[in-house]
Amino acid sequence: MTNIAILGFGVVGSGVYEIVSKNDTLEEKCGSKIKVKKVLDIRDLSPHPAQNILAKDFSEILNDSEISIAIESIGGLSPAYEYSKSLLLAGKSVVTSNKAVVAAHGKELQKIADENNVRYMYEASVGGGIPIIRPLKNCLAANKITEIVGILNGTTNYILTQMVTHGTTFADALAQAQAKGYAEADPTADVEGHDTARKIAILSGIAFGQDVDYKDIPTQGITQVTLDDFRKAEEAGCTLKLIGHAKLTNGKPECKVAPTQVPKDSLLANVNDVFNGIVVRGDSVGEVMFYGHGAGKLPTASAIMADIIEIIRN
Image 1 (cartoon, helix red, strand yellow):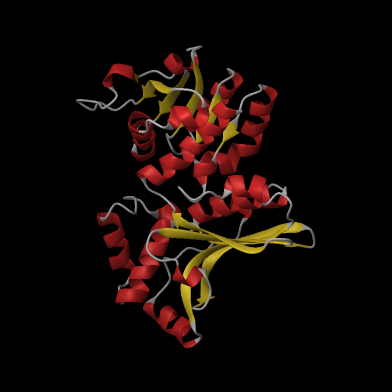
Image 2: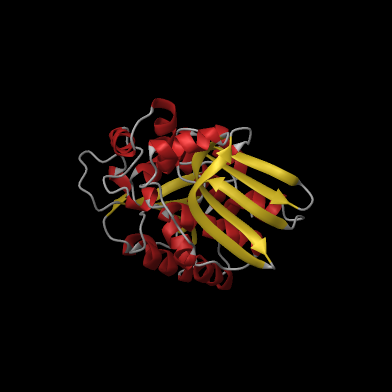
């Protein structure tokens, strides 16, 4: 029996709880029954889906010796970072979808995990349900990665798709995204490109083995994109996408985020709506592309569960 705890019961946390509750093949896949022993949620939901195992105080999880893996799905930097660090120091593995914490503190948390013989895993922090971090670390390990080009934010991709397909203005497309739940009430991190910058920083660090501070990445969002920009791209045989780009230049990683003209005959030009697409170029494998739902309850929870299964197996 492997006891896990879920910190935060929003979209992602509830998705993990749902998968564990309904998937009866998990034990066969990882060799251990998985049980959610505690759920940390400070909200007053009545009735709460996890009422019988609800924790209101983080210490209930931190001090429970029977819990070996914690899923951090709180979001934001604090208290997510502090909780993750405390859990690792207490000898518990941590799995997260929190790109803000991974981008800002991932190296430190990984070091703490190694020193305490536990795991810090974050497949779900980039690309939602798309496997990309594990392939970079394992499947493509024999390659010298030279470049990563990706559509890494589903909200902005949805907005740009509405603009090019229906002639919708940015403001109206953003309102549609918010109405559908694709964009937050405060969409700044998405539309200004900060979310994409965090993700390309994470991928660059893994691919090139050199840390990149996402705050140092030249970043331009899509708030200034107009329908006239799409007309100009069309004349050049292209479309516009918000692209996160990382490449090695003279042995150093060089990253940027910006709306970019993408040739219509390229793979990324056909990644639309809330989907993500990530192209990786390696010296041996050539060009490979990863495509799928870049966000969402069950796709992201699926990536978290893959990390949990790997921890249990190993």
